[in-house]
Image (cartoon, rainbow, N blue to C red; front, side, top):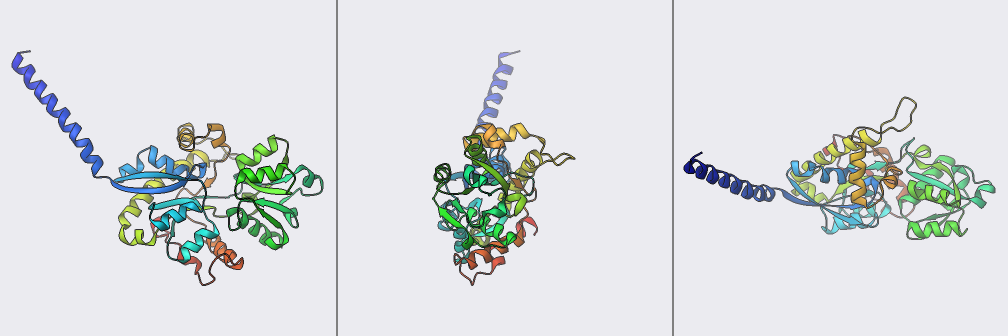
Length: 339
């Protein structure tokens, strides 16, 4: 090879490298920034998957994940403009913000579904021996919850709707967080708790109580949703559309990997199972075995249980937690998922 040829190739190689180096930042600059508030839970899995596997980027979005520690913090962050989107459990506080025109549901997140052990009713050993052996026996008992207006509160309410009692027929003991609930449970201050799968299994492993049923088997309901602000829908609709397309791509993978069942109805590992567990474990800072113990059901097309959302609004209105003038279906804009 002549010196001239070598020089020409070196120059061309250097030019190519320079163009590539300048093109990457330019490409990155074309991504539109957005943000989403999430909790470090397996139920946020599709969001973590969409981020880790580049589905948001493929839609032209640079999405920042902002972590929160309670469900109520997320819609507040959306309402204040701290984040563009939120995905978490639905509470009375969420619907109060919706009544003020601050948040709107645009797609489904996780839900309690038959055959998927997500939320358990757990009785203390003493209460179990005294006859609390099934969910309907919770009437008249002391039950630890996080807060009034929480998802736990609603689960007690719909269980009562099924078995003919109301939340007034139980004594709800609000203790602010799950660790305090477990402490009260183990100390015998309450008869039962409603707890996530991972927590309930640990309580049983500690010999402190017994699982007497699962909310998904008793009262399937729409536990969580993806939401944004009405102004975001009006002013940045293309961003909402891109975000939901990426979310749905990840959601379909999540569903195929974690929600598959065999002919006997037993859960089986679907395609990409180990890869997706690793992504969720990294995002939540949990061990893989903890992640896999609490993987909830998620509709692969992000379709919402509309009737249950309507029931949630009516329930909170009957509890005096939400403005009675709120029209239930006004809290949803499901055009993005074809509902």
